Length: 380
Image (cartoon, rainbow, N blue to C red; front, top):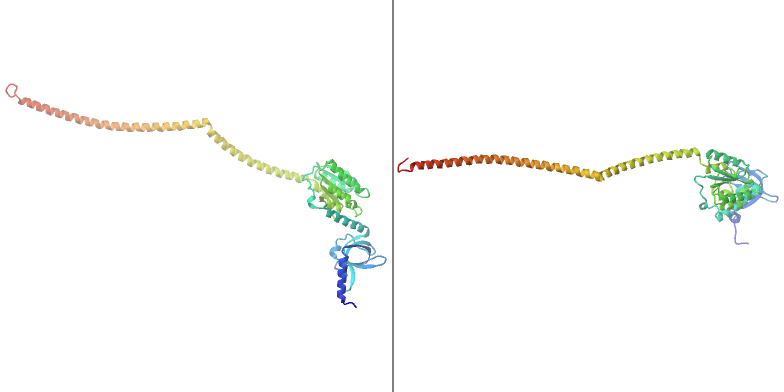
């Protein structure tokens, strides 16, 4: 008897760990039976073949992504993790994705190629090429008879009639499609007659769109020097080409919107820019006019003739001031001279009167002396 004695819980737990550790993300094909969907939204079913069956569960958040309604008797391909429901010891599959058996094999190939190309860096965002801001010519790689081409042409003609369009016709379904798509991508790159390429088609089944999941097409898109917009199917359709392309458009019509300019919007933008330019020109003209006036005035003031006139005016002003000063000085001197003359006259008269008085007194004294002196011995 073994020394290891398990309880039922321990056994189921150990079995669960072994199953989950060794059977993770496996692909399994089988026929659906006993399909149920309770109010929780989860799916419960049995997958079986001729000799065995296994219980399965697919939780609501996962089954919302399934594009079809499972039916009993339907052959499907599922990707699942093997687990064990410990309370009952039931081993089961927890399903992540589900596809009809035919599409399921293609989906498995899709996932494998997607992982391979991603590992090689073909999906790297830093390698994506920018679309031209304003395209002058656009190339369309699609069927010449498909509705997708007509949708693209209609939108381009409405939004931007001046845009040059080059069509590179190719099959977009069937055995020849892959080689033709690669050839048209290489031809467009060799001619270099367009700014951007739209590669795509309208909607269809996974098999219909499969040429856009081929490795050759993916690598041709990656090698392209022209930016490429993928526009394959409807918005819910995703292909390998979408991951490699520089930009994915949900539909061909959306791709046409991306590469074309809306002329009405463009005219409105041009009017707005014209208004801004007019306002900027007016401000610049006003500034320059004021500056020109300032420079003209400065030049006028600095002209030799104007400087000479200014100096002459200054000289005339100084001359006038000098003349006034001389005149005032002359008048002051004249006034002083007149006053002095008047004083001199008064003093001269006084001197003359004194002299005459002195002389008269002298004469009188002489006369008196003469009278007293006898000339003949007698008194006169």
